[in-house]
Every structure is written in structure tokens, then in C-alpha cells.
Image 1 (tube, rainbow, N blue to C red):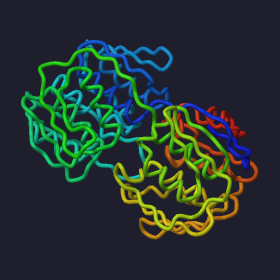
Image 2: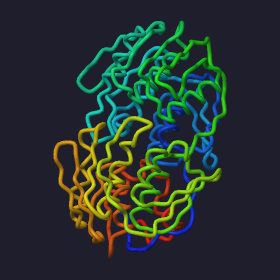
Image 3: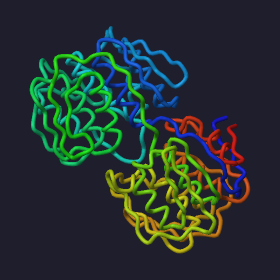
Length: 416
């Protein structure tokens, strides 16, 4: 009973609302540890990864309560510095608790984070940066301890604009002594959201949205309320689904300002995009055109999280598309599953050569990770016949209710 059933071939029509951002909510929840009081986080998505973060916070002594999509976190009494290996290994984003715990109590004992099969994603960048702030790291085979008597400011250039490392430095630096400067910082909207929450709590941060961040440490943070922005990757997934299946849809609350790279590509492939203050719409009335070369990049380039969904759309585009993955070395895991549905895809190193078919054919396929699972949903929506997608739980890590949302858009899709 961990599957999605799709009877494909229907045009998508109608509208649906985009949920709060997974990749913004998780570090904001981690940041609540820095505040000796209660924080209210609105528009928080009710997804598996958020519930895992809730469990980790509760293990550390926080009280976490929900009302609809508002989560209230009381971190007054942090009673432990250790998190169970099982909880940490199930979710990569648990690494965000590293910087937060060092800022709050100066010590943390945790397993190496897991939860992802798309690449190695080592935390070396995180640990190297934190060591520059005076943190001592004691590594063991499966666990490590990080501790510091007093965090100190630094002037540091990241060797790669890692989102996670940038977030961990922010979380450690807001209560550190002095002014920390981070160069080659990640510029993703989720970094801006974390900065927005921290500034609402009294942090002194400048430069969010640019490659240079300046964080002046403050004595303490205060209780705060914050609304999580809409999820650009969920919105992108649904836009790509309409590209693949055809039709006319409107995505309420879709963050057009953060979808520039996708909107450009969608237009090149034949989608007619409309943007207004309420969201983003797309109309697709003809078969997609192939795109000669598309490569994933850090923000504001084409996001790696939309690479697998776009591959599913390319599989039915007219002509040959070339898709180059530059972020993660193992993000073509979906190819074998798409081939079961009739896709013509050839892999050479970090490039996929996709020759579009008129239509894919429904099949029984398996999700192995979050975005690849969403891509299989896209493939199933446009395929003829019945598609069964096993391992639904991977998709539920990031999509609040993907079946509900696509039913709102006219799809024949259910869980089972």
C-alpha cells in the first residue's frame, strides 16, 4: 500500500495551490533552536521531512505543536545534545541542526546525515567552515561530536556555493562574537527565507540574495513569527507536468520570481506562460519541442531538483534533447524506470541524450528518491494506459499531497 496509480493520457486543466517550501521550512525549524522561547512558523508544509525534523527537535527537548499548516516550536528547554542515529540518517537536512546546536549550547553529538541516493553530498564543507569558527570536531566511523566554548567570527570563502554549508554558517554566526563574512555564499531563495526568519528574531544580517553575506553576532535572539514562502520546486514540477501532458493550468501562489530559468526553458519548448500577482499559468496546445542543451546550475540557473522532472518531459518532446547534470553525480537513476515506459534515453558520463517519443506507455515502476519519484508521476500522467509507481514514501518527503493536487488539475491519480 505504498504506491500511486495513474490512468494517463488526459490533458491537465484547472488550478491548484502551491504548498510552503520544504527547503525553506527545514532550516527555519532548525533555527528555532537558537531562541529560548516560542516561534510560530506559518505555511509550513505537512510532509514527511518536516515531520522528521519535528521528531529531532522533540528529541532535543523542544515542544512542537500544529494547527493546520502553522507549527509552533517552543525551544525554551533544550535538554540534550544528542540525536538518534536512525532519525538523522533518514534525512539529509538534519545537518542543519549542527550549526543551530553549536549556537545554542556549544556542543552536538550526531550521526552523519543520510536520506539521499542522488550523490555523495559530503558534509566536509560544513565541518571545515565551522572549524574556522573555533569548533572542534571529533570524528568516529558513524558519528561525530562537534563542540566549541565560544564561536568566533571569520572571513571565509566557500570553495563551492553550497546551500547547506551556507545555512550552517548562518546558524552558527548569528550568535558568534564579531562579524562573520561569507564569500561565494549560496544565493538560493531558501537562504533568503532563513535570513528573513533570523532577522525577524533580531539577527543582524546583510547581503542575503547575493554571494557575500555579512553576519554581525548579537547577544540573543527573540521569539519570532514567520511565513514560509511557496515551494518553487513543487511549482516547477507541476509546470513541467503540464508541459509534458498538455493542457491549461494555473498554480496559485507559485513564486514566479524564483522560477525564471524554468519559465525561459518552458517557453523555448512551446509552453505559453502567464504570470500575475496570484501565481503562474501555463498553456500547452502543441507537442513539445526538444531543447538542444540544458544544464543544471546553482541558483539562478536551472535547478538540479527539476532535472528528473524535465527529463520526463523531454522523453515526449519532438527531437533530441541534451540534459547535462553538473551538481550531483548520481541523478540519472530514473533513466531505467523511464525506459520501462518506452523512453529513448542514452547516458554518457554526466549527459543524457533524450530522443522524444510520441507518447510513453504505462508501466510498473519504482521511485528511488524524491524528485525522481515526482518525475515518474509526470511520465505516468502523460502515458497511455495504467502506471503504478511504487515507493510513494519517497515522494511524500517533499510533496504534501501530489495526488490531490493533480486531481485538482483533472488527472486520474490515486494512492493504493
